[in-house]
Each structure stands twice: as structure tokens, then as C-alpha cells.
Length: 122
Image (tube, rainbow, N blue to C red; front, side):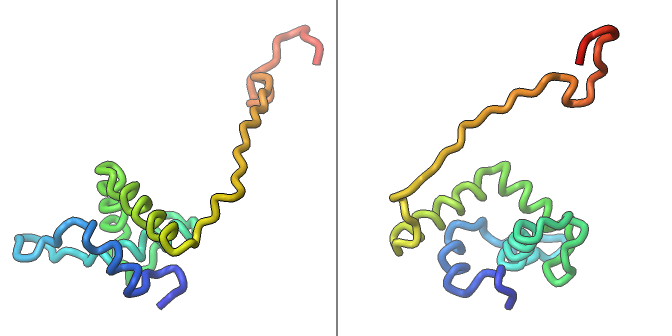
């Protein structure tokens, strides 16, 4: 098991919140949620394009479509909330220090590649 794949305990924590499997339905057999989640974590950890997903996670189109659907339905946000609540209960999160950066850097439109006006001083 790779370091970014779910352990049994982690998967068992998320399992009750995942949609039911499509057992007994027609069509292509459903790829297990654990395999899909591990594929999503691989993409997030490596920053690779979806097309570079290793084959043992399933077809990249399948992993992407399930990620996209879960994100649209709000499931990804709920899973993250569950993981954060679990981490808080184990005292893995420390809220003693927090920093928020509200820096705004304004750039002239020419900085983005717009053409300068003729006769204007630089």
C-alpha cells in the first residue's frame, strides 16, 4: 500500500458516508469506492493530470467522473468535514496558531500583457 492510500481504519471511518454500491444493477460493474478514493488521493498528492492516473486505480475517466459528481453533490466537502472532526477528536489539529494572509497586490493592466498606449511614458 502506498503512503497516500487509505488504511483500513481510514476507509472504515468514511464508508458509512459513501453512496451505496450499485450491486445487482445492469451495465459495467461498479469500481469500488476505496479504489476511486485512492485514485483521487493519488491525483491530489502528485498533481498529475487525470490521464496519468495509474491503471490499478481504474480508468481515469471513471475516477474523474465520480470525483466530479461527488464534488458537485457536496460529498467531498462532507468527507473533509468528517475527517477534520475526527482529527479534532484525536487532538491532531492545533488551533492555537492561525494566520490569514489578506495581501492584495494590484498590477497595472499592462502587467498582464495588455498593449501600452502610444506616447505614454513607461
